[in-house]
Amino acid sequence: MDKEIFLAKLADVLEVNRGELDEQFELNANNWDSVAHLATIAVIDELYGATVPGNELIKCRTVGAVLELVEQNVS
Amino acid sequence: MDTAMVGVDLERVKRFGFVHKPGGNAFYRRVYTLAEQQAYGRSPELLALCYAGKEAVSKVLGTGLTLNEPDGVSCQDIEILWNRAPDHPEARLRRKAQVAAQQLSLFKIVLYCQHIRALACAVAGGAATLQEAIQLEAALRASLGEIKAYLEKRAGARGLGGIGMEALD
Image (cartoon, rainbow over all chains, first blue to last red; front, side):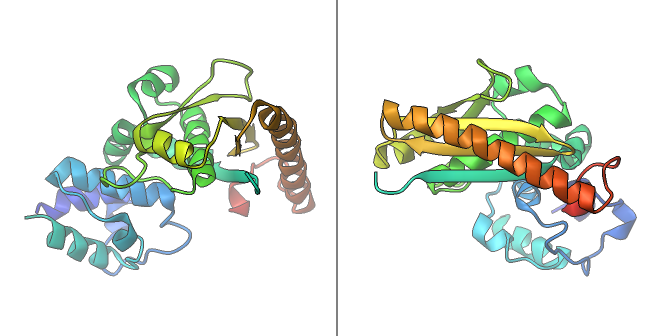
């Protein structure tokens, strides 16, 4: 998994600069909306051809948790 | 049908500016059908309104939206195109969305969409008969007007008249 490419795209999804995004970055009601969920699923599909369950993704509270979920679903 | 099935959705137009960035490309190509992409290009205003329409319709169906989950209603299963009045798009249902509508015995989905300041607002309802659809059209048009009046009043009370609604989200 190329984490850097993923994080660069995730920064676009979350409307922040890449420099602001690390594994501790918090996902909350202000940035983790339905558009962000679908856009993150789309990026994962685009980069890795993998499907991440939406009901698991929305439970992620940090970028680190999203990265873990991606790693679990990318073979 | 004993209870009216109604869905409402509000989206910040500014949120959809990310379709111009690399991280927004995948969302754009997977959420919007080819016909929607041709109709709306990369306009955040139009894409937000279209997306709000999809969300509102998915709430009527009781399914929510997915991208690629085999059992879910995909964003592309609900196509929103303006073929009639400016505030009154048509919701075309395909695949899982069509099945969900059939299971609810829906004759028609009625949808109204409108920009209210910096927000895209959509209200949708499911009608089981033509008569119900006619009644629903009037009710949804009125409710959109009520939502607009409320948001305008709220923005006015906060002195946000000139800067849009983003601050209220």
